[in-house]
Length: 302
Image (cartoon, rainbow, N blue to C red; front, side, top):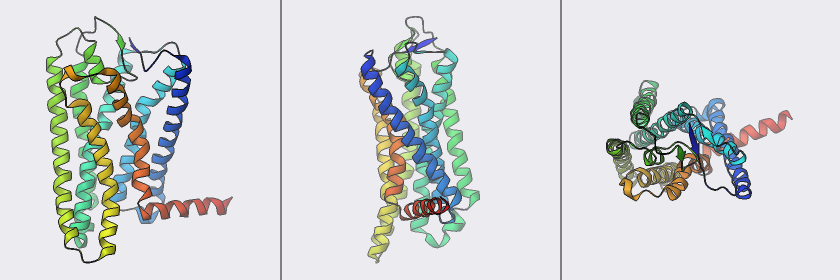
């Protein structure tokens, strides 16, 4: 049995935090599941780019749901305990979802490269026989990475303390309270995260290298504007997500400051899933048109 200490013991502050994160969570679910619904029901959004976006939205809704409900309960409860199995399950799920999102963002960059660099062959080169395995491989990579880290972390002994200075079961705070030698765990964390980040970012950079080359050859200003609008949102999402992951995990254990890292961890597990629907919809004409169509239909029915 572990105890999640969270941010503060001040009950008044916990009430404010509860209301803040409840609002963020509701917005996250409505935004992300709303995007999934739009892609499902609107024929204009039924192409590989939006299939990837719907999978990303589903991941973000699940990602936030792994962390936020337990955190909200703890804000209002004196008993902040989480079982050994519950802690392991939470860690397994959020690593699966986080790793899958890293690979999926790389797959989305490749999709944009195919659509912009070779638009005439896009429907062939990004057929279901291509994008379905890409999505599946992203999930498989997430499951493998999560299995390794969860097994390695929960094979340690926690005889010194059961109090986790965090709002959810993340790897660094659990390593901090273990009385076992965590050197191997730290190496696994550094090298696995390093490999995932380098490989996924390399795919993104190479894909966008070809995309920018294609943009330079475009004569149409409107075409360039459309490409920048489509790719700008994806680049924004990639930069925010990978930036926080690199800051969080690609450091020596001696540089961890748990209170500070708790805020960073919440940013990529709670705040980024809320921001992604905004990032990917506000600058996307097709998504905005699909939303208007859905609202008009509901208004007409009422």
